[in-house]
Image (cartoon, rainbow, N blue to C red; front, side, top):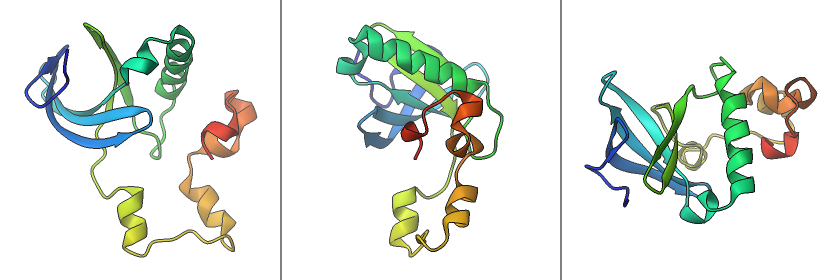
Length: 137
C-alpha cells in the first residue's frame, strides 16, 4: 500500500503530508468514524520489518498512551493495513520547533529552568516512568 492523500488507512482518510523524519512520515488525516482530524505517523518499511524495533515501538506507544499531559500528544491508537504500520495521535496545530527557532525563539544554556518547563515531565523524571532520558533529551 502506498500512503498518499486520498488513501484510506483503516478508518483514517489521508489528507496531506505534514512532516518527514527518521521515524517516518506524518500525515494529516480524517477519522471517518469520529469525524475529527488526527495525525498519522507512518513507519518506514525497514522499521516495520524489524521485529525488535516494532516491539520497542509498541512498548513506547503503550507508555505514551498512558499519559495525560498538555505537552504530550494524545495517542489514539496503532493502525495496521496491508504492509503499513502507523501511530494515530492527536493533531496539534501550530508552528514546528524549526519554524519557531527561525522566528527568533530560543532556549539558551543560561536558562535551563525554561528548557525543563518546556519539556514534558517524563523527560526529566525517567526513573518514575522507567524510560531512558536519552530518548527524550
